Amino acid sequence: MNFLDINKTETADLRSMIDGALAMKTARAGLSKGAPDPDQPLAGQMVALIFEKPSTRTRVSFDVGVRQMGGQTMLLSGQDMQLGHGESIADTARVLSRYVDLIMIRTFEESTLLELAEHATVPVINGLTDRTHPCQIMADVMTYEEHRGPIAGKKVVWVGDGNNVCASFVHAAGSFGFDLTFSGPETLEPEAEFVDQARARGAKITFQPDVARAVQNADLIVSDAWVSMHDPQSARERRHNQLRPYQVNKALMDDAKDDTLFMHCLPAHREEEVTSEVMDGPNSVVFDEAENRLHAQKAIMRWCLGL
Ligand code: CP
Ligand code: NVA
Image (tube, rainbow, N blue to C red; front, top):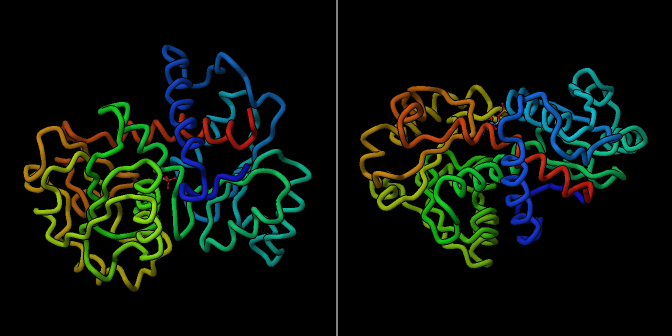
């Protein structure tokens, strides 16, 4: 099975992945990071991790996760492969499928991911495209539920740019049944197609550009960089000017509830989209999110491989 996006995966499967991730995390209590898991479902399996963009969390968490489950990994940079020098993604998919059991890719255009999945005969996982970042939001749902219990019916407020991470939150609202409020400039709203899909699945998606009003009664506030890896550097100044009113700072957190959680997929740009006071403050769970990438992706890989 491929894990291409949250909205393309059955809700029951997503739920079993979150529950599996929590169980696997619990089973590792007290073990050192490099110690093998109590069971070794990926023994004998080879996983290719392809990166066409930079990464810290995705790279390390997939690599460590595979090893903990007894498998082996191969880290591939797009530029070092023939893929970066003209070989087609379809042929790359066909070739890699002869060597490895699972492929994770971080790339630019979504079409690259979809073409890889179409031509690979092994499962493919989306490790971020310009359009979505589903593994991140699986970790975020897991993190919310670890801290606060079921996310269904809760109010999640996305503050800032309606980017790839925001898009997967929109998908997740449809799948996990939470309410999502978007607070950011109108020109940076998430794609209408995704919003319509989530609404058709029963999600309540609201747009509230007044950020102080948006965060009232929020259970979770989420932010991300103002300039993503796929955004042109020429757009940097304009984006900063547009997004400055949407900084998550102590004053904004004070407009929410005492126990409102704060999340950010990281890397963060401290004192831009979020202040250090919030990021290092008592409501922030950003490093739990980072840790949970490991556990959530292990569950995703097991699901993909039917293990
Ligand atoms: N959050 C996230 O995907 O981080 P990396 O870019 O470091 O992988
Ligand atoms: N929106 C960010 C997420 C990084 C993990 C980007 O695409 O650069």
